[in-house]
Length: 538
Image 1: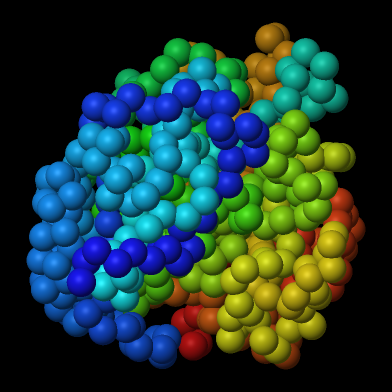
Image 2: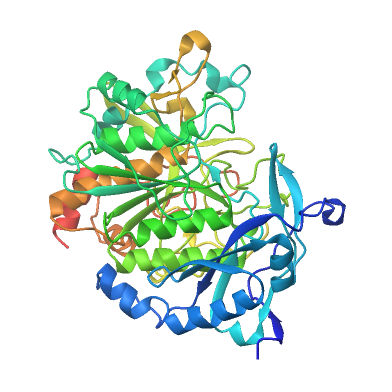
């Protein structure tokens, strides 16, 4: 029977203010919601065996009977079925606020986020009890922001010490590829890198100008449209903290300059909500036409701010990526151990990790500050500027310790004390704005000493850096590295392995650098050519 209702597990949402004082959503306002259903059969335990998109859809996609059952209920609830996709297990339904509130027993209100009106709810939603085993998640009822871009310039260009960072402390991506000994003569030819962006955009003429300035042939950059996605929408002010173009340009310029032979595909989400984030990631993972082999994720949010259903569904997508032979590189965030900005009312004054970087299926990319002399790195330490700027890292409180980390002396989650679970990051590279990247965005050059503008940094520079390195590795090996984490940890545990350097100094405010894996820089900083040689011997 579909008239008995049950709470949808993992759907609980909080609103850290007076929810009841918010205005109600107009009952006739129309919008769409995405319902995700269970897999036809679970994915097998990870064994290194890869499958094709066709096999994945046939064996682990949706059962059409599940769509039929939900569709019948939706229509009876005055919702229209817009689309279904067996491979992605997604059904999109559309209707009025009144119909959605009744169908899911929820109260929808309007809240302001940085000048944008968004739908919000709190508590759990309800679904027919008969559909509880079938429905995995419902997203889009609440479309408040979840993820933020992980690029960083000085918080206050006029007052930060970083504003005085000399231009010689900034590096082009080409220079950093040399400093990190990326394998030559490889340039990523034959590889496809997918870059996920939550709004923002780029101007092709400005990209061409940048690559000409750094002496690199312009890579092929293509925007991939997908159902429920957004568009390339560049703004005007690169220094505006809410201007997403800076993130887009940083991602494209780092990945493109370090792997100019690779095809770069950009997938723009509609906004920064959990529904849009999932939709964009799903479009990438299940893109059986372009078949990207590497993904760069420079967006995320504090782990506790994500609902369980969102974490579960994003983890499910990343698990599918692993089985499809896709490497997913994710930034760990730029708010050091807290992962919250100090002004965020949701922060509990504790330490947290960033999601989705803390997913066991992601290659979590942390950050350092580098010092260079005579064309060589002479020092590299954890990037941290008290109290809230620096590379994210720590121990998850929600996601289990993966097999590849079980032989480590993994610390417990700290501040407050917690369990031994997934530790991040896995790897690290230059991210500090004080030793950052030369970037061009909306006519503004970073750094620009004449305007007191520092270099651009953030762990979102490390995700495309590693994506470019993986593109070169894939080209050199003649195969996709795919889910790289188990291989990296196995290599690091091999006696005599000199692939990784671990910074000896620094902390992120809660965790400290130490020999071997640590919760600031992971396994450390990789020598690209040594990593290639080690993988060749695998």
